[in-house]
Amino acid sequence: MATLKDQLIVNLLKEEQSPQNKITVIGVGAVGMACAISLLMKDLADELALIDVVEDKKGEMMDLQHGSLFLRTPKIVSGKDPSVTASSKLVIITAGTHQQEGEGRLNLVQHNVNIFKFVILNVKYSPNCKLLVVSNTVDVLTYVAWKISGFPQNCVIERGSNLDSARFHYLMGERLGVHPLSCHGWVLGEHGESSVPVWRGVNAAGVSLKTLHPASGIDADKEEWKQVHIQVVDSAYEVTKLKGYTSWAIGLSVADLAESMMKNLRRVHPIPTIIKGVYGMKEDICLSVPCILGQSGILDVVKVALTLEEEARLKKSADTL
Image (cartoon, rainbow, N blue to C red; front, side, top):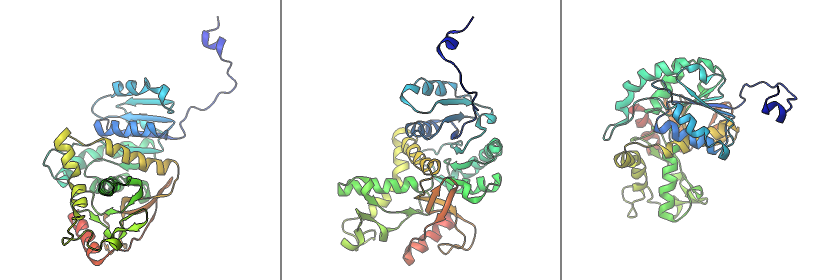
């Protein structure tokens, strides 16, 4: 006897079930779920996998599945078994211990390096994927991921200063009464305390702040624009103090990077890459600089003109790592 489905639907083609634009999120805590929902709202994947090495996040998976009517991602899966990540085009890694209130980011290094060694080895199920590192400390762990995975340098990406620059745009816009999309400026170097704002390139709607107000970003500035960068550096600590962790802005920033790769947009993002031979670096070091990002990962580095002071600060940022 024919089932209801057989009576309703006549199959015309046996199609392959392998995903074409699968994204995996490894580490399904607050940050991982912020990444997941941000990705889903951008309709970037035909399959989303949620992987957590501690526990099966089936509840999170089901919660998202129940909202499928409002999404355009046809398949959402979860599990502890790394094989669930198979055939991913992009693997986003958020696994690791969280930064505690008052804890410096670089103190997290040893804890998360050990976790990372295990996680990276399990990316073997998607040998042609791109890796997007979110776990703290991102700059160091991206270098670790590159070395352990054996992936080409351009295929290992991290969120880097993409969020720092976004915070800079927001805070600048708040001062000017302008939307962040019309505010422009790079924050380069380490993601954190030693990051470097490139004040010479800061502009609103193409109008240079330095041209209008040459003191921008220096100690003698009576308007104290330097405070914008200080606020950027303190942002994560402030949010952590208030709610215990940061998540939503990270997820939105990660989805922004994922969109450039999944859609091959070739947008410029301030993200880390190995910059030996560029910006005066003589050794392998992973620092955020403006990079063109597309479906093959990091395609090019944009050489921004820096002042002597900015270049010195960038080298100091490298020394921090």
